[in-house]
Amino acid sequence: VFRIVLRMAERFKIESPNVRYSKDLIEADYNYNTTQVYEENGVTKVKPCSTTFTFRTERKVPKLGVMLVGWGGNNGTTVTAAVLANRMGLSWMTKTGKKVANYYGSLFQSSTVCLGSGPDGDVHIPFRDLLPMVHPNDIIFDGWDISSLNLADSMKRAEVLDWQLQEQLRPYMEKMQPRPSIYIPEFIAANQEDRADHVIHGTKAEQVQKIREDIQEFKRTSGVDKVIVLWTANTERFCDVIPGVNDTADNLLKAIEVEKPLLPSAVPSVTCEKHRQNPGLYGMGGGEHSVIFHHFWLVSYRCLFLVSSLPQLELEVSPSTMFAVASILEGCAYINGSPQNTFVPGAIELAVRHSVFIGGDDFKSGQTKIKSVLVDFLVGAGLKTVSIVSYNHLGNNDGKNLSAPQQFRSKEISKSNVVDDMVQSNPILYGANEKPDHCVVIKYVPHVGDSKRAMDEYTSEIMMGGTNTIVIHNTCEVSLVISVLITSVLEFVICYVVKQLQEGV
Ligand code: NAD
Image (tube, rainbow, N blue to C red):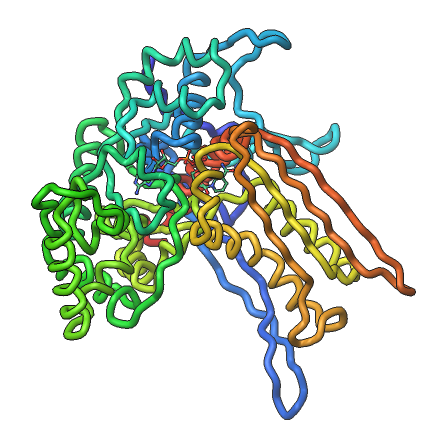
């Protein structure tokens, strides 16, 4: 059933001096024309400039492995289930009739591009046929989660897919078990503690080493040619960028290396909430020890804090940055699907040093994607947008995690950034320090589950004192939207980025 077919999706040939075909490669030269603008003696001068790129694509599609961090979450289980259902051509009955597995919503699998004009007008082909690229049905999944549930039970917990489909997928998904993961409670909401029963213990260096071994083991046992690691775990709080800790690649590696072994959970006595919330400081384990023991360590650490920067080193390297470091050191592309600042300057420098592709932050598929398009349209049309109010409510575990202030703040920053460039581009409408009122609200309403409601109001000033108000309402199962986006992101990364980087072009 799971036979992998490596597709050679070349349905047409380009006849151009800029495109060369060899047995293994397609090479295309592309001139990227831009302009350079500079000032000379008070005059603004504009100079055309052109850069030639050579894009090289392997004609043989690699066997792709994807490791999801947060595999047991709504996105992780939904994307795995959707790929399995498509691969097996499953169908199922719902109250509105028979449904058949498909990839509607996938840029590559379900959209077309115009190849040019033929005798009978425009010729459109599926986007996926433009270049040889991995088909999502051929992706092999693996991953990590702090929750030990197998993928079938996690899919049930997610409440995204129809029950009859889940029943058909269960025999396959119950055999899939996430690997234990790195858990530092300080970074995600305290309300996630209940599911954290599947964690890697040890120092940060040992944890990063374990993730590297997991990647190596997956590569070896699955026989995949390339691995992409994708963070679709809970949104973390932002971490501080601290000189000497995470500001350069060497400092980041040192911060992971020098950390002393975490303290043992020690003498059981009373439950210590502070310990539970910060095992990075007090030691992983049951979170139970005597009050005297607790105060002893607290005082010791405070003294240490005065004489060294060790506690800061520990606290400002997040699990997602540790996954990024492990992935980069293994030469695997890393995608950050959540809004936190995983890519601190040290992580970016490390990726550049190893020529590894990293991408992020945060999946944008609905409300925020529309916002960037709509603000571009409004301001580009010369309307002065003065207020943008985005309200959401959702009831899945992502919503529960985002109901904590620090995790909400990460999302708020990533949702707000998208209008800044457009506003800065138009000094006719906006003064130097002027920008629209921009408000983002996210509420957790368990009853609606994965079916997120998003309401947006855009108010713009139009000539002669007029007001233009656009209101948008959107209801959708967010994990389905994101799962299909994940398949496109993976296809894009493997086809356009990883190959080109690894070929050194
Ligand atoms: P989810 O809560 O259902 O899944 C997250 C999973 O991550 C859980 O199973 C949790 O146990 C696990 N987890 C938490 N910390 C972990 C760690 N350190 N290591 C390994 N696993 C860990 O959430 P979701 O709906 O699947 O969303 C996942 C992420 O994608 C969230 O950060 C969310 O903000 C982001 N995102 C989602 C959407 C969307 O519309 N679905 C859009 C943009 C971004």
